Length: 383
Length: 96
Ligand code: SF4
Ligand code: SF4
Image 1 (cartoon, chains in turn green, purple):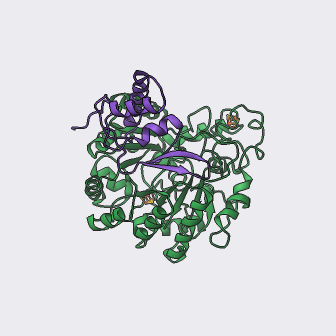
Image 2 (cartoon, rainbow over the protein chains, first blue to last red):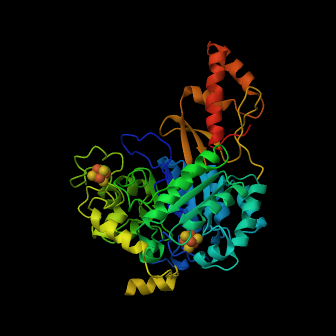
Image 3 (tube, rainbow over the protein chains, first blue to last red):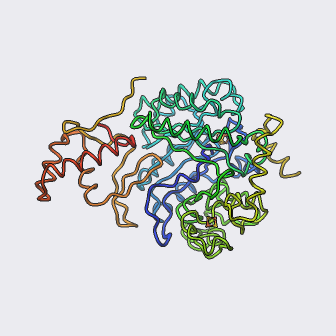
């Protein structure tokens, strides 16, 4: 799961009742040849043997379409590790779901891409860990990855599939932001996503090596704003600002359980891809329960949906249906309880704590990563 | 870098590229344009314009057709069509 951008909700008017999910995030596997230290997968990674089988995924795709979803994000881990990806794309196409492949692009040669394309793939989102080979390969923990990604991007373009380049940015690569944008243009990407790391999952573990300084962040925002002008009509830039130096939180996922439904490799159905980091919640599984049943009545979805769960100061706040009280995962990671206001909000009693933490982490003494591997995850969990 | 911003004019021939799909969303009873990581809800006017972006008619002909169908002054329609399609083109979800 490369994307760190739960805040990029579709441009749609907020409805009154969240009757149907708009998009389903299918995390097909946690297997991945890369080891990004900010990966949004849970620290406890699922084994290949725990993954849902093809038939179950096909059923999930049908149910998601019946439930009203319009898009499917095929993600992971590395979704192309699954040999049945073509079948899943074809099914999505058949039931009218727009398919988006979120990939690191190192496993797919021309032939495989052709067959994914023939199955009806609508869009590719390709991640880069940096704008040049050394950084990209070091941060992703995969030698030779950068060159493979370039070749993959060429093949995507040759087939006319729209390409988005995704860059997760942090202290160790923000200095290359301008060349990242240049790379996206060079690769004929129509969109680029610049997403700052967030405080949860692997990024939380690695925060002292990742947190940007306030100055870096301000500079990054300036660069993005200037590039938006210069590249108007050439490259669409989606920029996900981190909120640990902000006054107000972001609306996460367009509101908990309102627009997205995420299925983990083993079938856990989550309101957002990071929700498993909230260890106080338990999640229903597909196919033991249908997606509709889970969407409409599972405890995890109901718990923070809407505004009823909110504590003060959110309850009486005019922004309660704009940011929905912010990110539950961040609230849990920083304050120990997901029932609290997101500490990114200046009205949160823990706001000062978050800012102090970010400030301290941004001056982290070491740039060493704890890479995302199953073994490291098991050790962390055991600790 | 050879890429340049596309300027939509009367003679442009607009089309939806691969990865941009017009679809009726029956659950929400609305027309939507599905695009990379985006979803645009179309109102009636936008729908009529987008439906005509097939890589066949140019903008002038599209405006002519719309003006006739909706008994509206062509110059006004033309301005609306160009504005909408320039916006979609800037969002990189239209070719012309
Ligand atoms: S390790 Fe990197 S490429 Fe692999 S799933 Fe995580 S973020 Fe994506
Ligand atoms: S108090 Fe709650 S609703 Fe208001 S801005 Fe802060 S997080 Fe958002």
